[in-house]
Image (cartoon, rainbow, N blue to C red; front, side):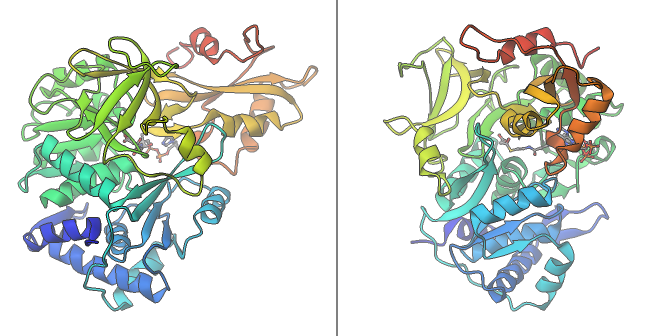
Amino acid sequence: MDDGFFGLLRRRFERAMDRPFLRVPDGATVTYGEMDERSALAAGWLRSLGVAAGDRVVVQLPKSVDGVALYLGVLRLGAVYVPLNTAYTPAEVEWFVADAEPAAVVQDAGSLARGLDRSQPVGGVLERGPDDLAALVYTSGTTGRPKGAMLTHHNLASNAVTLQQAWAFQSSDVLLHALPIFHVHGLMVALHTAMLSACEVIFLERFDGREVIASLPDATVMMGVPTHYSRLMTLEGFDATACSRVRLLISGSAPMTAELHRAVAGRTGCSVLERYGMSEALMITSNPYDGARVAGTVGFALPGIEVRVCTDDGAEVEGRAGMVQVRGPNVGPGYWRRSDATSESRTTDGWFITGDVGRLDGAGRLTLEGRATDMIISGGLNVYPVEIEQILDAHPAVVESAVVGLAHPDLGEAVTAFVVPEPGTSGAGDGLTRELAGTLTDMARFKHPKRFVTVEQLPRNAMGKVLKAELRRQYADLFSK
Ligand code: MLC
């Protein structure tokens, strides 16, 4: 037993109590010492609500300093953090709560602030073993039923230490943070690395291109999804002068096109460092800090982590496309209460099957080439077509539907629904579209199709399987017109 991931952070904080941690938009700064105290209050508040070690705490809150304190309070108490996208609807949250069976659900920032102000701090750090759960991060699945990816204290700690070293984080860094903190990227890549370095974080409530550009001159590092960079490219002021202190622009959560990579370098003088990861395995590969960052590739396996590419029959290949598999201290123990999904995601010799298709070159550099599943990544958020198709197909005016991701200049991929209306359906146009959009109200807005296209039939192969690749090819320019 040891004191887990929070213990590791705490030992770092102890040497940095007076140092600034979060700089918030009104200019105020929260020091590491203040955050330490606030997290002790959060642990006390949770304890007063009956939360004990091992219990899940579901959190759906706007990004805030108290939200960070709550996360650290959960870890400090040895409980399990379950972050939810603020866009999830009450019906979606209900599902997650039923699955996670939490001891507490925190959705109200006001109650959290009052709770912290009144609680008795828990100053110590509860003992935790490396294999104890620290977080459950929900991801949807190919069946449309979300799964909670389990992450242990050891997963979090090992990945944070690896990233801090790989990206040369120092206490003198200033990280520009405009990501949400309910996902791995904003929480476990950005904040963990910063906290482990005890550096300062410019903590923006959300991504706003102008605000980011106004903050850039103080920053040494920024992390974002490709959509953040493509939005910055549409604005004046995203240039080498704004980036004069920046030593590192990092991109992840979705593929960055080689074109965008080159455009950012041309404007700012910074070669974006693209890295690759996922909720189930945190960060897996990264382009080098020292060395060529090759546009369109996600770099090399991080130290201590192994990546291989295998064909369907399990043969390991180099220079050819296959399924990307990973093994290492970053890989979580599986899906919460889903031993079926856990074993499906492992090879018999214990590697985690990512679901991404990629190619390794002779030097070990990975290029991603697609996905084995039809998952869509829209603006850095994963969307599973089946979830939407099931609802559309249930509508009486719909024979069948197919949801695909089409290239989109802002979102990377945009959710697009192809719908075959029942013969004789009068409004196979706007009327039907409005009606169908209305059936999706229990689903977070970011998953809603950006476009509905009515078609007479869906393309199929000889086996009757819908050819989504064919739809993607035929309608490739839908969003660029
Ligand atoms: C918002 N909207 C989206 C969307 N985000 N639609 C599709 N895809 C998205 N990603 C929609 C809203 O539903 C709303 O629609 C409208 O856009 C305006 O909402 P908003 O909240 O004002 O949007 P905006 O602030 O512009 O957000 C866009 C964004 C944001 C790209 C800045 O989505 C974002 O920060 N994405 C990053 C996600 C992230 O952190 N991913 C990491 C996953 S971890 P309407 O119809 O209601 O008007 C992971 C592992 C790893 O993948 O390796 O990192």
